Length: 115
Image (cartoon, rainbow, N blue to C red; front, side, top):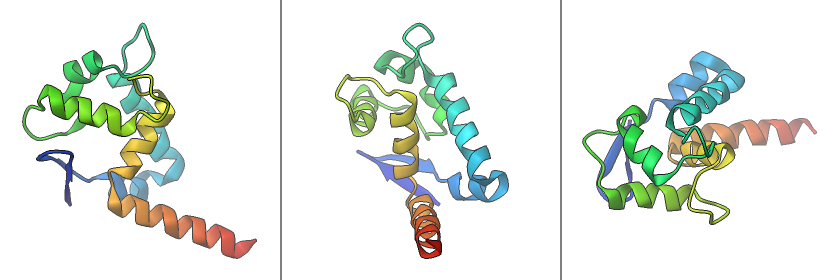
């Protein structure tokens, strides 16, 4: 399923099928690997520059403009430092997948029902 991010940037949502195939732990490991591919190796965070350099690795269709990249960074930047640490990146990736959000809600409800 394709979803829009910010302006007219569209990405294909493969996350639900990845979770189904890899399980939750395997999926989080893949997100972590994706973070490492996109991060600035010296700063160990995703910066505007590292995101711009590696944006085609995100599976986004077409070239993203600087404004779209900044929108993505600001969308995920929870602590206001202008970069994405690994936790912020993982949270952003899950938030960008409505289907994955539904699956996460279902897991939470099942876990709470067992308590």
